[in-house]
Image 1 (cartoon, rainbow, N blue to C red):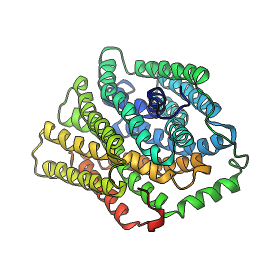
Image 2 (image 1 turned 180 degrees about the horizontal axis):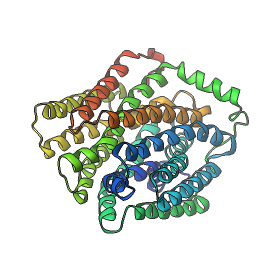
Image 3 (image 1 turned 135 degrees about the vertical axis):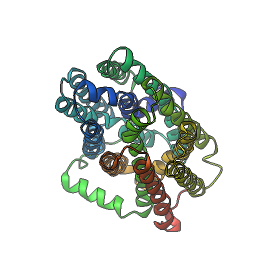
Image 4 (image 1 turned 180 degrees about the vertical axis):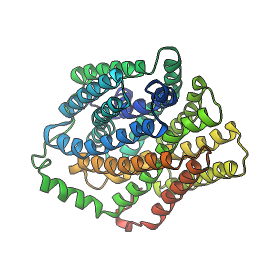
Length: 399
């Protein structure tokens, strides 16, 4: 049953919703250098397709949660898939970088529904104490797709052309449209008729931002997503263009990172109820920071070993796989009545910050790995410090 929490089918369904945006980036990243040549454009212009994607993703997230609280989860999901499909068609047909930028923006406006509504549906159907575990297992499903999609993207680019990547994404969207139409029953118990009123939306955002548990988790995990998109934006040009990694093998870097992320999320699903979440999160944030500084030290010293660099990023990805489900569960726990709005605000903050970091790494790129890895080290430090310094009162802490 797609509307019965805790079942494998439900977890698979939620993980598939989560996967819309990662699929749209992970499969696309290996194509960036070839795309720059195909459209006769520059590195910053191609990286703009990532930053614009994040801007569209962020802006649309402001509305998905309130719309889902007002009209229900099912129609909102179907609408998001329709927008996503339209944007993917524009991308596939793009003959210029300008058209591709527009298509990516529209695609992102659709894709944003996936993680917002996936988290919201879990919050609707699962008890608060179970939500972190189910979020973790759904994240495993999402991470599992990222094990193969980067390599798929590289192979598709080399043998068929980057446009076919978007054809695959269109197929995925259409399959999910049928699944939701036929198999998903509305999960919200009562619609909130005031949810889309601008004054009520702003009031709800204000309530959440004043809640220190929400703020602590949201700020910290936003730093981590900034780390991820820094790497996404800069890695293909660095590893393919500077370090000479073949396009067909570049996807293996993301496969290693996705495997680490997936394993970590599975670990959270198993042990999340046995240890205090604060302790688990703090340990993971510390590990992420140490691995980032190890990678930076290698690059600064001029010791460019691809296996070692990927290993450090895999450790960071493992830490992030632990942090993500705990942060989202902690952020959404205090206000079940506006779970969609909470999910929206987390996603908006995270995406705006990530877009800024993705653009920044493009501007800082100097033909070496120092700017990218220095930015990653700074961001992981911010993730740990914000978690330590923003302290909720004891009554607001989760187990």
